[in-house]
Length: 478
Image 1: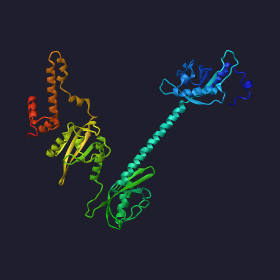
Image 2: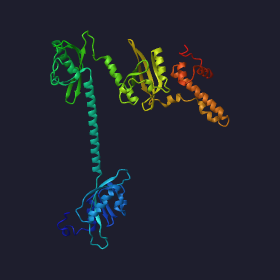
Image 3: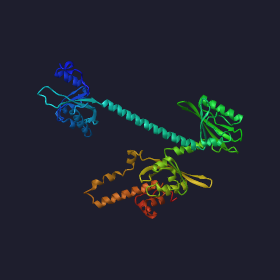
Image 4: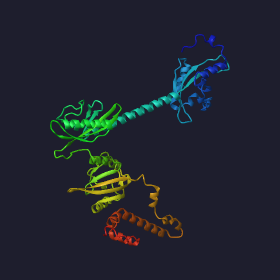
């Protein structure tokens, strides 16, 4: 440590009060520690630390004012002061009533006194408040984490885009809005234009079309640049004469505008093989719908399902549900699928059928099902739309399903009516509610209700007459 050249002449005349002011002003917090490491006195260079109540450290061992992991650093600071080596700054943490630790950077210097009243071996400890530095470090870490999260989000988005772009059955071309050069082309576009050129990226579009087709595409591109939209055009390749549909849209990017063109082949008889239209948009809508959608055969085996259904049953991919019976996840008692299939065969459609859907781990969710049977030539299938309603059920809806008020009054009968009579009345009430619920779920189909309740039809008829529910004629009886 390099000190003053002539301290006795330059600062030897200073009073004790002046030295104290200099020490207090030299740091955010200054401590005077005796040879045993006990804090004898302290001063604050700022009110921010003084107002936190740290003046209670006076009289306590310095090592007990810090956190457990900082205690070895306090011992090292005291050793450095005893050995008279160059002071080394060390960061320690003090517990705080606010929850977050108080970070301070300390260095300790041994001082000698000429006064006989002052015990030898005392050290002056200078402390710097590192809260601002810690806040900046935390902000930097948060920014790094946010940047990393954004980086992975962009990578995921790019991966999804590349997967969809390369896997599309339509030819896709990305064209620079200014130069009209192709910047990207998917495999389907290379397949459609294979007879035209071997290299699409970097070439100017339109290319490989006959003269009317070139003029039509140029007109479409001009309309896209001017208004942002244009009608689809039907063109012919110059070499093979094959017909293509060309559809375009504009996309704004940071570097400017780009044109996205979709190419699809037209079969010789004039029918569109894969022209993007209402049907393909409907298929895309079903795949991305928030409600679960499932197509099964007439026996309930899953033929296709969208991503929402896969997520609802907590599986990884559609391949894991394909070929499985929908009844594996559907229904409270395992017979709801049979009821649905029977109703669909009779009526052709079902609306808002309440039931439950179990995930592959067994977690139940309240759902509503609307279904329809579709005949495609000799092949028929069943389509199910499943909506998760477990989070939308309100207290008012549940209150409508509660037991009658007489159930709440049963406790008043205790002491006046034998317990077996109370239990018998409660059992009858619950049995009646179960039968009513089964009839509601099966749309008054008594055969299906009996199967759902695990009763024979004769037993169900007896109970219907007993509770006065036999007035309505069910569809099954009809």
